[in-house]
Image 1: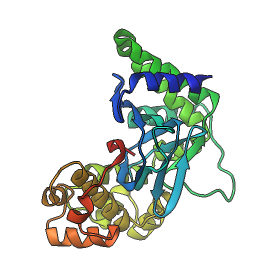
Image 2: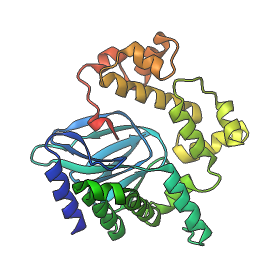
Image 3: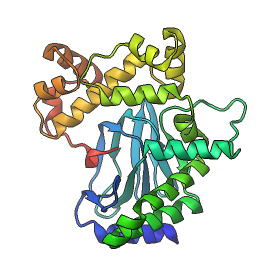
Amino acid sequence: MSKEQIRQLIESRTDQDGLTETGIKGVRLFRATQAIPCAPAVYEPSVVAIVSGAKEAVLDGERHVYDSSHYLCCPMSMPVQAGTPTASPDNPLFGVYVSLDQRVMTELTLEMDNLGDYVPIGKGSLPAQGIRLAYWDDAFSDALLRLLQLGQNETDTAVLGDARLRELSFAILKGEAGSFARRAYGAGNAIARSIAHVSSHLDAPISIDDMATRAGMSRAVFHRKFKQVTTMAPIQFVKSMRLNNAAMKIAGGMTVNEAAIDVGYVSPSQFSREFKRMYGQSPRRWSDGQQVAFGVA
């Protein structure tokens, strides 16, 4: 029942395709009534929940399709290809985008650990790999509904917004993606901190040695652990983050040279070569007719 109420709430508050602010920091509704093929995007730390239709994300060649049965959890910034390939006027996509607050997620993770509420990780289980789909359980549905209902009243939102966001964060950490998310926010997760630093400093020189030093690891150990978490080698990750961010900026109207400089490229020709190698065509040709769904993952 909560999920249907969420759908009705989103439908009543979105009158056009794209993102709609809720008045709650980091929480946005979205709608799509046309198919948008997968295009370069960057998933910031977030949860994306779909109540009608389906979305698609591709990370390092692995395809993830999620709908009203599973939500997507991305605890660290990730370069992906994302789109809404099945959306149409007869099959509209409705969903919610919730930014994950690193401070809140870390506080909750440490508090749960201190209380002995550990999530066991089974032998032979795969390491965390950037993003994870999780089943919509009742706790997640109820917490998300209670959060979105605040948007109907400005006073309720101001007074209760932080508490309801914390409740949703707790439901995520207790849910199917809980162990995955808690590995990203738990004590001593140097890889997550390294990714956060890269994401916020794309316009500055980034070396793998510096990333390893910041993580307190040797280059070899850092490379191995980084690839376990993200599926990508560090240099590949940095390049993908830069190129995907640049592609989104170009699709949003920024010139090719401006986008290249904005993500740390000194040489426009090098940027064009690497862009063409990744996307199969030059930045200028690629930008013609491109759309990036909602401006978010």
